[in-house]
Picture 1 (cartoon, each protein chain N blue to C red):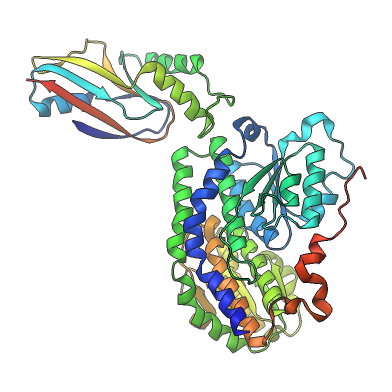
Picture 2 (picture 1 turned 180 degrees about the horizontal axis):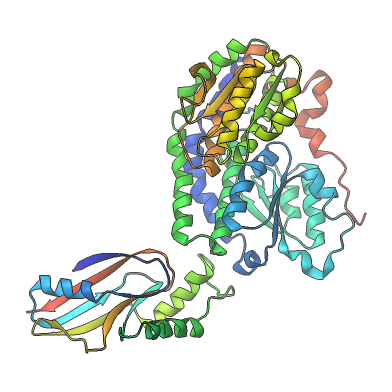
Length: 379
Length: 133
């Protein structure tokens, strides 16, 4: 248990160095991955993946959409693999305007491999964002953006998630720059801002650990949690919910701030469902998020706002992050999301991934997601 | 040598004659040469008549007609505008030398020195060196 916490914390604390080391290398790869004519041919972008990779797609999609003006869809790999080409002919190359970005750190998730094969056959430009250039996803794709990073101790994926974020951000900036939706100076400034987040991450985990642990301890033994956010922060909410499931084994779900008012609001026994709220004040959704604080108070839900404004909610309900551009906020939000998950696991005496034993033995070596039968359209 | 900063907000011609004249005056040189140099690969320096702004636009339009921004340049490290800018700047040139006589810049009545931006908006530098006595 302690070793698992140590490993998790080691991953979280290493994010500053990771960003510093990986950004220039991934930027260099992203710069040449697509030719200028290919970029000018793009009419539609699908960012697809599963688990953390889908969370990364959700986190970066608003930035890619805003920077390029192109239609951008984050999509789970099942939808990408079975429901994009369904009933749709290759159209003699006319689908070349579709760019499919297949995100998988291992590159071995079967459904993503399948999606990449099938959408390449449809005529799309397929680009794998992976840390495993020899993987099945990389082999299936026409192009590979290598986001491999130095190995670290085993823990619920945190470094790999941030590497995926970096890869998609830098690819997005490159597309926007070449399309001249932003000047080279602006793109360069945003790249510097992204790399400079290494400074904001330095010591961030250490500065938040006590407060995060205190909040989890105050919540007692809870079995379910909601994690809320909108836009890029919905990606962070999805990532955090995933870590709570993986590390602590509770039923955690991500929800958009607006959708919460329509749905999760009505869940019974609200006092038993801690709610984590990502609330960057430079977000275009900030006013609605402020309304949500009032709603949570009325419900009597235990909650924690992860924000850059100490006055966003009562002090005991706030974890403060440095203020950054909303589009880059998921990078920093990774830290409290992972910390809260790590300490929830400790509180519950939970073994990460349930130790891949007992009823969970089927997940050994990720067999459940790697060994699923790949169905290609012409087979 | 004096460096001047210039922030361009569009592609086209920017009158930098006052920069050259200021450096000439500061140098105290009355006879010699003045060099204007542009330390960028997507910008150039040229001499054009200032009297009709349409004429300035004609000059700018023609270089874009000769070297349009295309997506099939071999140089793809940056942007299509950048790639075209390299070609334009190479054609126009990155420096101009002027005669200095009686403390005056050797420009005719219908001549001004222009910085020519091909990849704006950018933050640029203009270098001026005066040689003489």
